[in-house]
Length: 529
Image: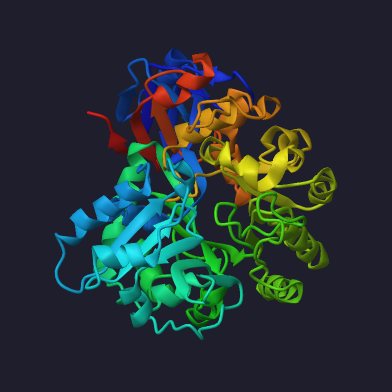
């Protein structure tokens, strides 16, 4: 039995509620309350005492939507996310190429032309000038687009006659030649030409990601990785190997991409199966792309591209059939839907195929919602996985995409909560930074990182609402609000400990707090030295 004391401990049961101490046992909270009373009650059973030394404890933060292996890969690869121009990216690629063996792939992550001084897309000819020997794959920050050079395109067998795949676009010039820019499902043409990843690579990426997440106070994450690294079994085994519940503890909830569901069936696995720390989740579906590349599916055309409504990854009939496949297995769905066209199609498919076991479906992102669509969502048993840092990274350029009128119904986190719609908070790492405090700050402050202006101040959340996204909200997303997301008797002993009280900070200071300790299953998995 362990006693935790010496600092404020916020229970998150209701706003402002905190206690002096807690006692934990068997990986769960045994009792909460006054330090002296708990000590007197359990002194004969307490084997460890942990003095917080003035730090502040919260229920363990959980990222409700990220890509764990992808985050690990970002830590391993050439990071292009902080670069401010195409020339800076090209210079980094040149320097990186000089360090590689002949023929080795150049892989970069996170470029974002909307943050560049000159907003343009790098052409394959520019990449060819850097290297015709190394194939290149450079993933855009949204992960819904990538750049490739001629070497990579040749290895993928891409020719002038290669058609656009369903749900994807090969960007071409006026002569019909591919420019090296691939959207959504078209990316798979390039990725399919890459060498198959090894189990060792997957384990390293997973291990790096988990250690990094621990350092940012994350006790768990809901991830989508199982369709991209050589099949379900290889990827799932990497999670089981790293997150073994002994050397490493982290609560990984893994969405099952519809592309591997039959492999999962063959393994005799399925929804909510797994271990205490690696659990399989809902059926993951993509219904559209992203705003950055103008592939999010909008009901009305893009303000800066009047002929374009985005990309529907599936027809309505296909989407309906995928939801039916989930229902055959008593599974909820978790559907990526950014544009209002996509969200409406997803909502219709869910309404037509109701879930009957009490679990909740999830719509991931849900960035553009009309009042009528919000009313439709109120009638469904769903959770919206939102990414508050998208406000910081998407403004002001997203105004050009959507126009001011449509923007009134976009990124509307406060409106959603006031409408009684359950929301969970995630980073979408590696697309955004993993740090949950950045998400909490963005939800409360709504300040853009590009021009430092505040956008849609009427949609600001309170600090309590923002923290709830990463605690109670993430628990609700997997129907575990009776065991996770708060500090109370019977709940899991997962805690995030910070050096300061978030409720006492100004909104712009929220991300300045530092993690001093991360606790999973009653065990300290990270401690700041």
